[in-house]
Amino acid sequence: MEKTYSPVMFRMAPIRFILCVLLVPFVIGAVVLFIWYLRCKAASLTIDGEKSCLRTGILSKRISEIWHKDVRQVKINQSLTQRIFGVGQISISSAAGDGDEIVLNGIVGPEDIKAVIDQARRSDR
Image (tube, rainbow, N blue to C red):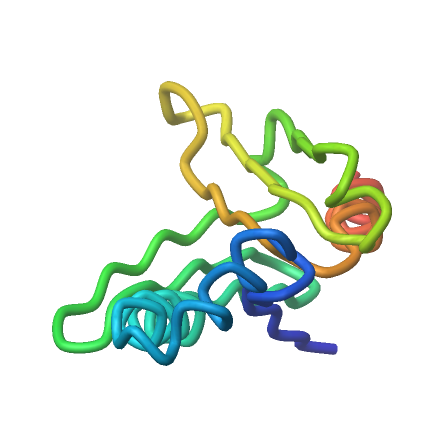
């Protein structure tokens, strides 16, 4: 079963979102919201039973893929407001890489993503 996750704007940073909406009449808010929207739509994390794949970019593409059998660590970072809204940052590192290879902020239900990866890791053993 393959599932795709993308960052969300309001739940990731509600105060910044509200400030941008308030600045829309001054054009700067619209520009910031548009760039933020493009960044959110340009990033997606796809998880299936075998691997996790992060795709970023609109004009140019970057793809990072980690097989679940090679995952060394899955980290979740959440601020207080992110915990309230049920979003957070997820970082995945593999045994072959140095540091976090997949990092995506503003993902809804990062604990659910970690559970899917952990389940796939357990089934590989």
